[in-house]
Length: 260
Image (tube, rainbow, N blue to C red):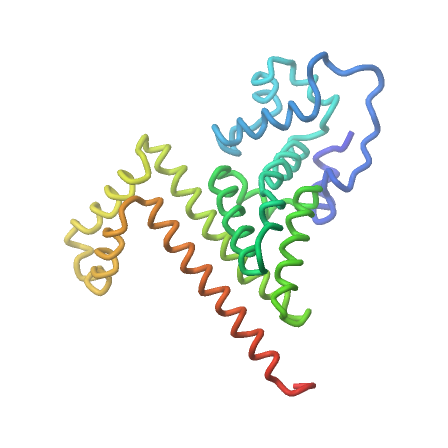
């Protein structure tokens, strides 16, 4: 069994995907397997958040004893890593491959990644804590690399372009998902929560002077309907800017003299 202390001693090289788990002797509890455990963990994480996930609560969700889980996983970290990879599997790579060119494939990857983050608000804080080397994560990462390579950028520019696009998507999806989580916690839908939040500081005399330079922006955003429409509009335009930037950099790289 992998102890939590063992992982603490080597956090950078610690992952359930790098461990060779010895099979348990005998048979596990009837009706329980790793897929069922992971599916239940994703449901719990979506509903209750990362802080409330525990082996005891997960066992109660499944109607088994906590010790039953140890037939299939060694630690809560194992469960989280399996859950991370499961939600990476929601990204439809066949739909990505159907894109006519790298631009369409990039838009599909970016939009699906954003939607995955907003469906699972616990995902973004976890993604930075674990290695993300499960089979689904590797497949998504591979498709991202292939798509950016197809832009025509030289290989030395590919990692930077990947970072520009997908760190933007990660940040955008993280803020969007946490906004949604906060609205849920307040018992409000996103539109009401946004409206009440904006009204609270726009009506406060202490903010009048500070807000004066941005009143036109706040008023413009209010013309775009729901919060969802605002998120979608801003995301699409920002992604267009990034794609245009890649196109411009490809043209610039191609126009440089060899060796420069």
